[in-house]
Image 1 (cartoon, rainbow, N blue to C red):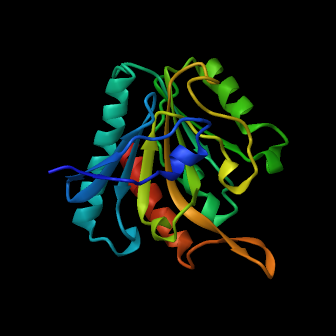
Image 2: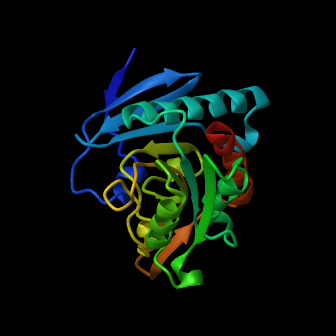
Length: 236
């Protein structure tokens, strides 16, 4: 049975949208709670996973299949066919554990140079280029029909740190969660539809005695690696 509850995804906040999300619907799929919402144009899904580093193998396999099914649902909504060309974009900085989810997923994608492509644009701080501009250029060059963009997110609630996977067709603005925006990656700025995927790995802490801090779990390296294996398997 479905229930209604207010629950805003971090992808909703990091997407470039002025709209407000509707009430969220909570269902149970493959043993996991899946929270769905819409802002009237785009859809958001949050899978409550818990800590993946202590998850039994069978449960990880169920989560992998669930991720694949959710991505497939977004494919159907965007009329993406099996013969379409995909560009999997691994956002973030591979040198920073809490920001390396996208790059670790991209490294595990099975590419063929014909229908499936993978790209790691790194960050503007490292390349000097706006991330969104690089992604758009690569998508046009490869003539891809859709983009799957994976990134680490900034959590708005500490309970979400390393315990949820979020999906949306709204796109994402890399770095916006930590006030370091590097352009919007969405259907409005790219040459094709965008499915964004993320896991919250940092949270901002404000203290009157010090400047705002970004805090991450002590085991973030293991958490990110576990999610990278699950997400890449689901995408593949």
